[in-house]
Figure 1 (cartoon, rainbow, N blue to C red):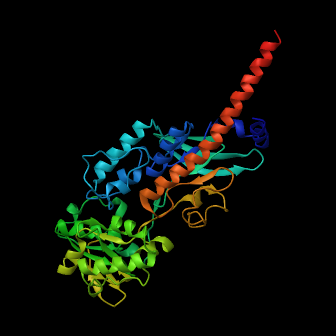
Figure 2 (cartoon, rainbow, N blue to C red; figure 1 turned 180 degrees about the vertical axis):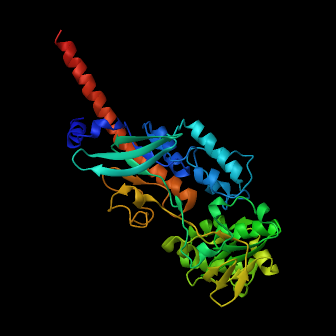
Length: 424
């Protein structure tokens, strides 16, 4: 408490701002990572505050995903700690089912985020030993500044906080509709149109497939090499199979076996313009964070010519795109499946734990804990399973300190009580 008064003395304007002292950690982000951390802290008996800039939990899933989306991995690899998916859910739950699960999860663990509260900055005060988290609360047309003072800060804004929009020559002159994949819901409104999909990751592949299913004519830009794997191999989840083999074999050998099995199931995909990287899919994921594409039907459309694979873009002009090979295509719309990035550098005033790209500097499994009570969850590039692992580690670490200090406080209270009694 003495440190807190020092903090107030430093900043004469401190008490002019609305503020609160949090008895526990502040968690920034109410997506799956933030919810998982909150649930694990609840199990440890540690109080917390969750801040969320949107008006709902899991806003990426609720507001920035397409209608046909399903989990790419079997549900047992996507469930959050302490609560499995309902037994009647399919092996690959739909977007709607996953959101239902997250809502039930928050309710079960009594997680009530502070919505419409956007973090502007967070910095560690060396003198007091507290984090100062400044936010802007939006309610209608009203904006209120607020500040949270806490010992622990958990960054749970994740890998996909902001869309990436590339700077492509002539894009502003194109004239037709241009949207990012996060704003794409369905191919229904693109029926009969020529659509350029920029990007060939899981989103680019699925958007292209969805456009085909709605009688649009998609051309998909494949700038660089990409691993395309079947979602299942001989009826078994590809991810589950790889996970099993990694228990017994080195990663380089598992990669070779996975590529042989993939060739048996999908054939040679390079002749369709999908060149494979020289590094195996698992090693590439571990070292560079690049996720392989799990095919759910787009490859058949590529083989049949319904999805046109094209090389990189040179420039756009009015209603047209010129490709690197000199070919020109007439197009009606552009969908940018160009991914997302972390937004941590824009608000966290810290340079030791996080790098400039918004990811922890330490590789998995050591990227969850920094100095001064700083933690990160959901930055492992290992999906929901990685986030769950981080969440459990963080809660255990904070919970251990919390329980020690609570026990010491109880002992001091009892000793004080006894001294008071002895005076009578």
